[in-house]
Structures are given as structure tokens and as C-alpha cells.
Image (tube, rainbow, N blue to C red; front, side, top):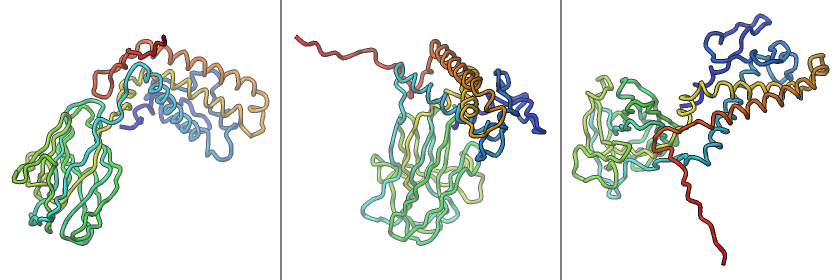
Length: 338
């Protein structure tokens, strides 16, 4: 999850200059509720590098959201232990005897991944590897078995008898629903024996591996059937497929859950950034030269109000129960000198 959920918190009303108001009716608060904010005046202040006032305001709103997010996380560090990684591991282990496993024509072969209903977790896949007896391009497909939907395709340039590696940057949120994925490729050629984990029994035909958060199983799906759980079958090993993955905590989800509480801080942070830009604008016109002191005073006023709103937010903020967040230890170690 990204912070897109916060983009509609602060909007721009009555854009003027023939510009449509695309956000009216969707935002919690509006920039023009702050004294001194005028889209028309800001358009006269922006530098040549910016296209127009609305595009620059949109950029500054995005910057305000990022700064508020960082300020929230930094402020909570003293009260809570905010974990970044829950797990960092590999699924699919190659064997040193290079035993060939026959192709399973008509099927996609690979592995099944199921994430438990644990909030604030996301699955991050950083590498996909394939060990097979084939040279050429192989499409490894990632399906959502709940929707029967193709999410991503990773193309691997395979070389027979060698482990081919592709770095990826794929991220999947469970979104408080069970995440259920299948990762596999069309089994038109032999692959080398690859066990699900170091704990897998070599002879297991439906080998699986489970930890506190995840379930993994060697699996296959028919090429022509809907890519749903009901059509999934267990398989021996992972057919030469291996992934490097991590389970990461998503603080963004918590920020999205408290978006109404963040509306005013984001508003004042954005106002301060706009006034800062007007204060230091290189353009010479009446709006800039005559009202420079006003811009400075408003910038300082918005920053003060921002700090006040954030302090109020932290006074009553409680973090949810999760493996990602826990209360910081109140025990303090001290050295006592004789």
C-alpha cells in the first residue's frame, strides 16, 4: 500500500482561470480555507520550471503528505517499536545432484503462497530464479487465486543447466483479506529438482511449509482452467522455481486508517510549503514584492499551527495490536559509579 489514500484528504476548490475543480466533494478540507491561499496569486509566484499553479500545488501536497508521514513515524519511535521486517527468506531450494524432473505438459507449475490474516503486513518479492533444462525466454506468472486474476509476469532468460536469476520489485498487500497467490510457468520442458524448503521431505508429493504468517506448497494449475483455488493441485517440489522474499510491515496502512486525524496537519503543512515557495519566488511582480512579509508571517503561522495539531494528535494516538508494533520497553539501563 502507498500513501495514495491520503491524496484526497486536502483538495483545491474554485481553481479559477478556467481551471476545473476536480476535487470538489471528495476532500475533507480545502487549501482555500487557509487565509492567504489563492491559486491565482500562487500562479504568479511559481518559477518557470513549474507548468502551472495547480500542478505545483499537487506536487507540494504530495510533499506535505510525505513529511507528515515521516514526522508521525519519528514521533512514535520513542513510544513504540516499529518493526520493518518480520521475515526474510527463500522458498525453493536447489539440490546439488541435479535430478531432472519431467515436464508436466498442459500445466503451469510452481508454488502456492498463502498469507494469514495478519494486519499491516505486505509480501515483497525481490528475486525470481529458475533452474531448468531449457534455453530461452520463460514467462513466470503471478496469479491472485481469490480473483482468478493475473497480477504480474516476470520474464526469465533461462539457460539449460544453469540457475537464471531476475531481480524484481514486486509488492503484495493482504489488505486484511487472506492473500492467496500462485507463481508458476508453463511446464513444457524438464526442470531440476527443487524442494520447497530445507525442511521438506524429499519424497513428499504435496510438500508444504508453514510458519507463523505464511503457507507455501508446491503446486500446479491447468493451462486452460480459471486460475482459482479450486483448480489448484499439490505438486512435488517447485519445478525449478525459487523466490527470495520478505515480509515487511506497512506503516502506510495505519496512516490510511487515521486519515481524518491527519487532514488538518497535512493542510497546514501544505500551506506552509506554499507560502515558503511564494516567499522565495524569483519572479518580480506585485504579489511577490509587496506581500513578502505577509508570506513569511503566514508561513511561520502555518508551521506553528502544524506543530500544535501534531502534538494534539500524538497525545491520544494508540497503535493497533500487531506483530509490527509493540510498546517500547520502559526499562532503562544506568551505570552507577561508586
